[in-house]
Length: 230
Image: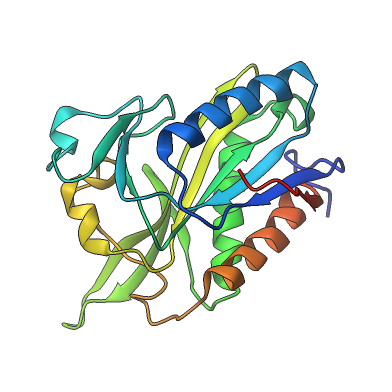
């Protein structure tokens, strides 16, 4: 099987932050790093972290998507998509890659991010899938009344500047799912959200990170860990 268009043999820096990162700090860091990657002065980077509870609005965010604007801090951002929630128990992965080295195919890149999540969750016996016309990664479960329902377990929102990506993905490990009630997640009101824990899977963040790294390397690049924890 040939390597996907998004694959590069050049190692990507892999950074994990243990303490929650304030959103303004993360946004400023990504902006600066993406500019440096575009200039060719630093390596590509994947940054795994958690945020304090907050809402972010993407370029397609609509006013009625923010149900409770006083609940948590709200940040407007240049990534694609509508409103989403970030908070403890959710693994955020900010992906700063140079698509000039990866085929310059935005659709292939987004599909690669989706596949990265799908392959990672499969390691924990969770069947996750794409849905046409709906951003993110989805799972099906029985609602207790014999009906199958679909819920979002991971979100994707990216931005490109000079063919360098930033922002990225978020996977619900064990966040407080009630915090999503302050928004219409990604503008989709008819479906709920779920997490690995809500599905009965007691995965640790460390185990999730290990699986994320392994599956990133299969799809995108080998990785090398940074010493600095931003």
